[in-house]
Length: 496
Image 1 (tube, rainbow, N blue to C red):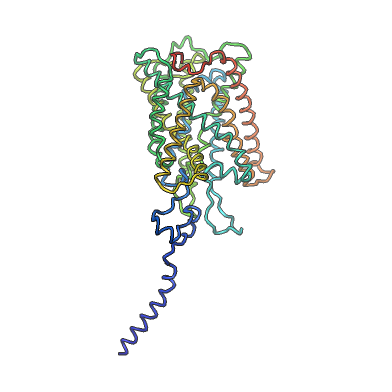
Image 2: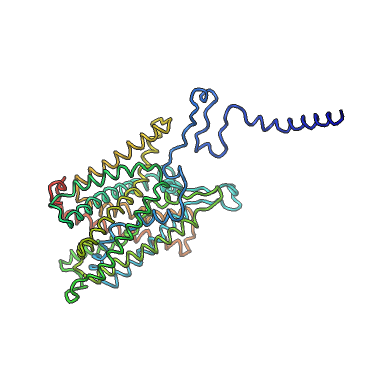
């Protein structure tokens, strides 16, 4: 009996101890701590009785599946940074010459590397020791706009960044659409195809792009960037090897400035400076790439992002310097705007290089457009109620398909968009890549005006603004000089 009474007493104590836990698990679901903003809260008991489907997470195609790795970071960065414009670097050396050209290439690498580094550092805000926020989780800025708003304020930050970012990212999408169609056309001609314009090839390229654009989130884009990175290395290596193996007659190679008026030479220098200065891209999507890396509330992503960034810049520098130096050494100031056209042989290898460019711009289009996909879809989600995963998928398919249609239409309408992109690039790259990062660092880190860091960041912002200004002037001059040659939809009449 005594043992039974003891067991009963222990049982009562056990039930009493469990009572608080039971009360915390009532039938009405409670929002999970720390996830209210992400999940939007749980449905009430009444709504769950009618529809058992849980409410969708807040839309964010960048971070909804944070499954990125250091490898995917490298793939994304190489795909974004090594553009098809690398094939035009040898021609810039003609206006600058060996010594100035090498110096500008090195300075561009250093400045671009630094401003990228600044963005990686500013991606995370760690509460200071002794502050009111000490011990709180790391604040992450997974979108460039978020960081701009943190530095300049919610309203001003959007307008300081967004116009330039949209111009650049959308312009790059159109430029790569033209590049994809152009390289398909070049391959077709090299294989003996009849005369045809670029238009049909742009449509073929864009049809494939519609399918790629349905990849749901940035992390899932890793394999696409992997292909793009491999292809960018492929056509760069082909250009280097062929330039070193199939040079022109060394007796006729000249390394002097190309002939022309003094004005033409001056603007040639401006174009060369901006081409090299803007060669290292990817800053506009650096924070989004870093946002794909998984991390706990107190775990930093900076070391992994830094590793991916450093490997990317080293690899990119090797390819840029290799193409620029071997191409200029082989052909001098007679090298064309695309080193592959100057080499011309063997045909089957040149065709491989053109197809590698096609595959690379497939991937690069996606990497740069994903920020716009996310921006548009999050905006739509704010004004249109999307209750189910099916509706979300339908909205995504519609938005991204229309987006690809729009870039294809503009590429067909004005296949000379490359000239316009030189202007848009100067307008978009200058602030987003070289001006805003150092200024945001000055605002957020508040260094003393007596420190080298203070003056160094201001010098970068001011000097690169001047370079961008001259680049815009040179681009406008090119557009004016070529205006008489422009014809809308000329890609369908065999002229382009």
